[in-house]
Amino acid sequence: MITGSGTAVNVVTVLVGSSVGVLAGNRLPARTRDLVTDALGLVTLLIAGLSAFAVTDAAFAAKVGPHAPLLIVLGSLVIGGIVGSLLRLEQRVEGLGGRLQRRLAGETDSTERARFIEGFVTASLVFCTGPLTILGSLSDGLGHGADQLYLKATLDGFAAVAFAASFGLGVTASALTVLVVQGAITAAGAALGDVLPDAELAAITAAGGLMLVGVALRLLRMREMAVADLLPGLVVAPLLVELVAAFR
Image 1 (spheres, helix red, strand yellow):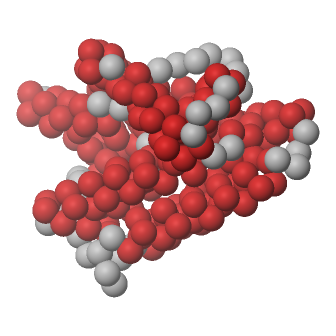
Image 2 (spheres, helix red, strand yellow):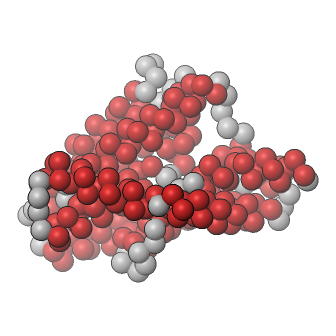
């Protein structure tokens, strides 16, 4: 098995799925596209809930104590959010989306530009903050196979069809985010030589699940959360696990 093949397949499925979605979306009325977006928001909320449930993981509680997991997840989001806000990650991601829009679609009106950026940001967050992104990429980098990324690639391909039907070409650009993020994690896995302990992985999964709740709220047009600013929490979470375990 070639290291990195899982990410390569994932990028291809996003490109193919989003291309199909763009072609289909042009033939759908606005009301239908809005309904598709609502359905995606509900499914994202379901995935978020399943991921956030990792806060109850037995290995997590055994390492840091029964009452600490919730506080660790809270701390990772708060600290990560502060760091991300100071780094202006949300603005930077939106700026990247704007630059990609100009390269891929040329100059368009403000409505199309906003739609492109929203599609790029939303799809990038959904495709890159789930547990399969981290666990699958690490497994691929460690040489344990890319089966989890192949599963993720299949799910992302279908999701890309639905996203692109609503948001258009911006979803296609999210393939670049998938390539960079999963490629970096795969490279880190190759360098680490071992998988993350179960407790740290559970903390990352739970924090990522709550971030996906923010994405779902955006899709359902309930709250425009700056979810990208929370992403450093995925790094903070395992560090807090080690810190709490050391002083327990």
